[in-house]
Amino acid sequence: MKKHLQLFGILIPILLSCETNMTTKVTTNERIIEVNNIPYLIKGICYHPVPKGETKRSFNTLEEDLLLMQEAGINTIRVYAPIDDETILNHIHAAGIKLIVGFGYRQEEGFDIASGAVLDYVSKYKNHPAILMWELGNEYNYHPEWFEGDIDNWYNAMSTTAKSIKKIDDNHPVATAHGEIPTTEVLSQNPEIDVWGVNVYRWDQPETLIEEWKNRGSKPLYFSEAGADSYMTIDRDAYSKGVNEQAQSDATDSILSQILSKRKLVSGVTLFSFTDGWWKAENPSQQDIGGIAPNSTGVPYDGVPNEEFWGIVKLDRTKKKAFEVVRKKYTEQYSIYEQ
Image (cartoon, rainbow, N blue to C red; front, side, top):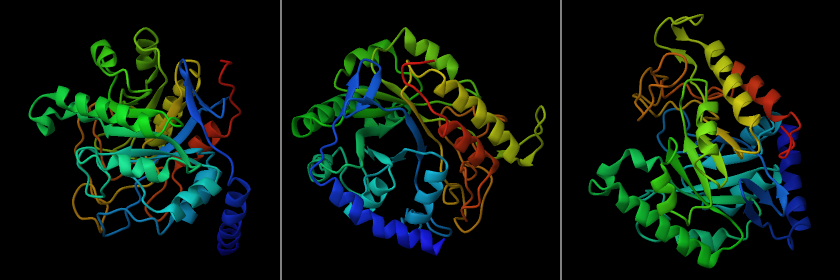
């Protein structure tokens, strides 16, 4: 492993120097995302690496994680807060992976929407080849209480920020991660959004939303969150109570199969998530049962979001059964225009 990491580090400056004069332009063409005029299917993962015993993310394991992602065929990482470190972005780019950069309304990490500092980040990194698109908010439509009880306050801030981003960067789309499918009214009120992400937990049947989108939206849509955890709170069907990687694996297989088979309607998925999150429920030094999430009764196969068991790898980076499912699905050869 050390030899691989050393080689990986050597390749980074070589790869970047070869692309110094290359501009990455990401555009949308009806329902499809294109990178330099080539259709791009997101085969992604949500990535928020928090070490054991801590509550803040750390990129100390980035090189190991990128090697695992490459093995799994992952081409896109979605992060919930911006990464203000060019070295990290360089590593991601050198691995052949693109980045969806998420911005919060108010964000401890900085560069948030409320302060307008998001524009400083976009200005700073808009020419970095790792960037796929900018993403505003994460299922904020579930939280009108954060916006004086009126969710239109969020939508107004989102649209205003999207318009401001486009004034300084015309090479990347602006997206949002919406909780469930947006209504026709929401779509019409927010024309500045180029790509709609949806965080969706409809058991193992995301195809139902895809059919709805076909008649509702005309822009690219991707599943910004979808997936299953590896803990069953009850015995149900063929799945026994307790840690159950088979339940997660089966659900992941069904979810990815449905999404990736609808490539004319959907631009892909960032599966939730890369690693288990021990920081979410109780003691960050141990893996706890529990945790809450809005609109999560559709989590397969027990209807309960055990928040610390969502990774396709464990916290020590041991692969779960779902990892092999992801690898098989993501390494298949796909044509955007053929189904």
